[in-house]
View 1 (cartoon, rainbow, N blue to C red):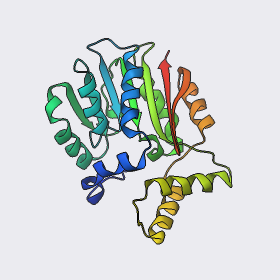
View 2 (tube, rainbow, N blue to C red; view 1 turned 90 degrees about the vertical axis):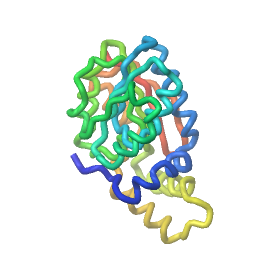
View 3 (cartoon, one colour; view 1 turned 180 degrees about the vertical axis):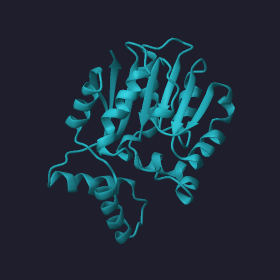
View 4 (cartoon, helix red, strand yellow; view 1 turned 30 degrees about the vertical axis):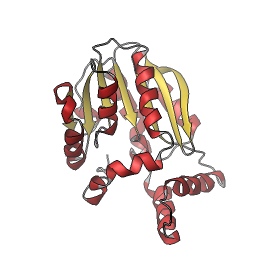
Length: 225
């Protein structure tokens, strides 16, 4: 598995990024907890993969004061940031540095992975999802959302340009936007939506449903067997 892309300045400015770059960012958090709550008990336990930064952990904890959380992330810097963000809810949050193999075995009542899987190389996707599945109770919901768009040309290039244009602050230098386009094209692990759903089924999840689509981002809810 590759190291986390977040360190140094990227950690310091992280909280500014997702609300600007992800359409409906705050609504995505609310939709996620709504979908989890359909099948979770009031005192349920949630596994959060890619928890660094703490934005979704904090949102989840505020919306559901009875839930407890185990957050996993490979970046020590991002986990330190998460620790600060979730301080009001520290008694209900445990943070673990590493990848999914580092997570407690559970079993958990639910799991989430928001804005994370496009950083996971394609050849690690299936095993990562299987490890999430192993940690869930039967019937437990799993919500994931990240960048996903067609991988055939010219559609791929069009979607990359749209992604960069949406997230760019007003007045961004065109050369910087071009650099961002190259980075997305070469450094992220982006799959087509149909591939995402196929891998979820292969990992053992059922009833895979698309619940969120915001320009270049997609989100699915599925359930452990």
